[in-house]
Image (cartoon, rainbow, N blue to C red; front, side, top):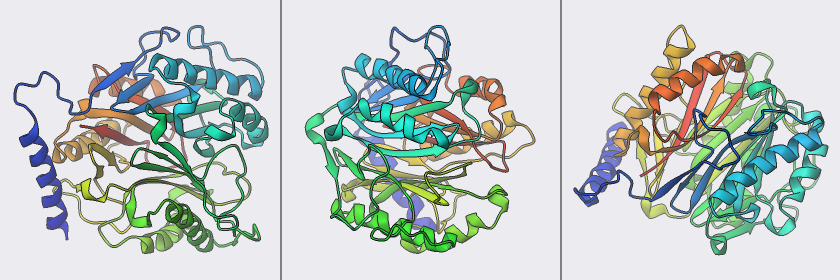
Length: 406
């Protein structure tokens, strides 16, 4: 199985190399623009937005004025500031809020969920609600109370909502849609394990994980897809002991049954401080209907895993890597190891770090942002990707996950 997967990835990479003009001045097959709105202060270690083809990856926008760094008072004004900052990126890319297809809302306090929802929803209207995942993290950059990271799609005619039949999934707790199509890519909102008809929640994490995957299955089915069409997933869970606790292993014992061995999607998993309501696990999916142009990129040292790709999954020209935590005693050593491992995966797919359009960095201590930024600049000295950074509960000092486009 390992050899077959690696050969498939190598074949895809070779095909790409053969089809690229040798005289092309650009390393990219998909055209891209690096979006840096005039409203933003220069010198960030990441790009506020990267437009690759039709897809715009927007860096995590926090609740501070992009020029002065001032933070308004109260979660309503803070949400408005983060959403306005996102609007600057959208407009600079020739888009508006109606182009947004999925968002992750990161909060410092889930108790502010209701107030955040009221402001957040006002930027879209029911006809344009994107998919969404909302989480509470133990730390956000610079003492922010909210950070919003989104993806938008340029061609509105190819954006559509996926809404399963009534009673097949739990009722939405906020202004979002269960799934949103953007071209051939489906973004599925973060889903929990409540029973659709009774709203009951299994006290066991295994039961919650199973129901979560079944709920996601209903969204996928409404879109004409199956679990096997997933190319990337995020798994978020609660456990006071983090990865050392029993929760992670228990949810994996159920999650793995939804994918054949060696064919699980790329994945990044984190222990967070709180999830919406009383759920103990929340899972998001990115899936594709273009099965003919899907492949896997596995470096030679990466064997098959029952729960993730251990490398990257290709959906057309887009590569989603699994989250990587590096080895070493310091943040700097771990970051370098993570990024070197990711670069190995990119190269199998015929890409390199310059093809990365979006990065997510998960720190054990948000106070180490400066040290992380220094390494990030080292690996992305020119035209860095969009980026979202949060603090999570984990054993390692960091974990990195990226999306790259040829």
